[in-house]
Amino acid sequence: MTTATDDFDYERALQACASGDRQALQDIYRQESRHLLGVALRIVRQRQQAEDVVHDAFMKIWTQAASFDPQRGAGRGWIYSVVRHQALNAVRSQGREVSVDEETAEALDAEHSIAAHAEVADAFELNMSLGKLNDCLARLEPARRNCILYAYVDGCSHGEIAERTRTPLGTVKAWIKRGMGSLKECMA
Image (cartoon, rainbow, N blue to C red; front, top):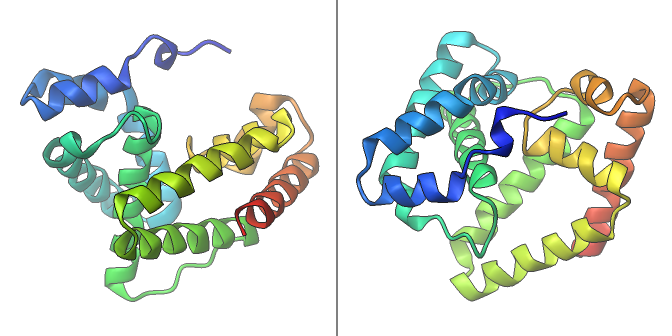
């Protein structure tokens, strides 16, 4: 399946944002805003709040684009990470509970662990961890790896992943659960 994102250069757009090019930020917004809104909506569960999260995330992307390091990951992943963190922070700041399925809970725990690690680790240690994560992802079977990336990078629901991969929903859920278990074991 070919999408418009295949031709978009996220790294170049982030570098342009870091240089003060507002058009680059607008290009990122045009390219990803509806997908990012979906990611935020899955976390905060309210459309108005999700729109606020995306707005705040784009402000953060604009002000922190210079901190993006292409050696540590893809530009698109960094953008999605900013939105996820912004949405999680919004949920935490409200102090309300949000019911989530087991896979999402594991992802939230992983996000929390990564955030806690980033606060205490220096840049070298973090770079080593990200390299290890890439190695662990590379060890997964391609189908499991793709399902995990669709879920946690693209923000797709299990149903959307099943449609994309033309795989039964139960199989997708099992692949994600087993893949996350393998990643957890590999990262330990």
